[in-house]
Length: 126
Ligand code: HEC
Image (cartoon, rainbow, N blue to C red; front, side, top):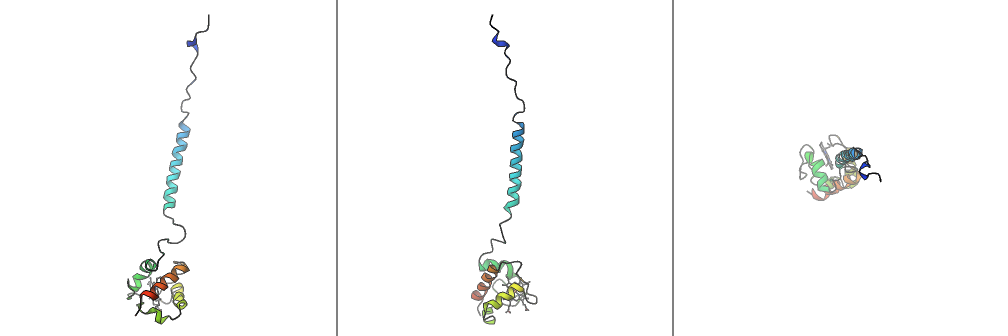
């Protein structure tokens, strides 16, 4: 008499076999989300949105010199190019500061300082 097939036991179910993988996947999602949050704020070196003369001027200089260079806390910049015939002298004032004029060497890249100085010289003409 052949052995009854019904006596063969089904392979044991591997309970919880997926559990560690699900945990691992969930962990990856959490780590990814944290990384996304952490990196979303950093845009590399310096404020990347400050590229053009108007952008830099309005965000860094207008509070003291007025939105159209008319002056306020700081002196009017109208006709500034005549007071600084050499652009390098004006760049030096912005870079190193002078009296109540703050130095921008730590806040702006030298390229940004040159950009905003060129903007002042070409837009605030007397
Ligand atoms: C906290 C206020 C303040 C901010 C912000 C500021 N300035 Fe000034 N700035 C002054 C003051 C005050 C003076 C006058 C300095 C002096 O008496 O020697 C001045 C002077 C200057 C001068 C010389 C003007 C002249 O005719 O002699 C230039 C050029 C100038 N600022 C450019 C800038 C630029 C460009 C920025 C932005 C990147 C800027 N300033 C931001 C206050 C400010």
